Figure 1 (cartoon, rainbow, N blue to C red):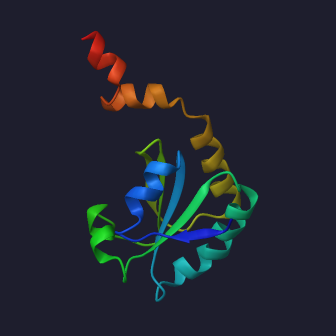
Figure 2: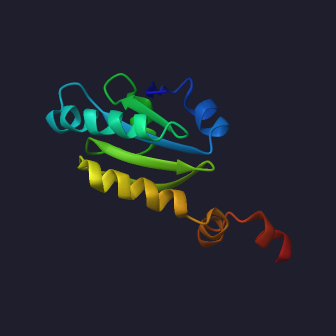
Amino acid sequence: MGTRELTKDNFNEIVEENPFVLVDFWASWCGPCRSFAPVYDKAAEANPDLVFAKVDTEAQQELAAAFEIRSIPTLMIIRDRTVVFSQPGALPAPALEDLIKQARALDMDEVRREIGQDPKAAEEA
């Protein structure tokens, strides 16, 4: 599928319709961003069941500000509309592969309980 361009206009739709979204916040002038791009694109090809998206922080300043992006590249992983990972820095391919594996293995019910978003826990309380 390749990568998709995220904007403030399509962000909510893409995140709500897809249970696992990786987001690369980047800019064309950023050297580490350009170095990370082929690694990210290769991971997208290797994981066609996931959505790989990119946010151009220059064109989408409002979206970058909403997520308090202070350094690029920043990689964010959103599972079930919950940010489970967000960290600046270009990752080497093995580290990105490992991160995807760890994010796939997350028990999202447990994650929601930990952050206080578990609807079942609210009903039981």
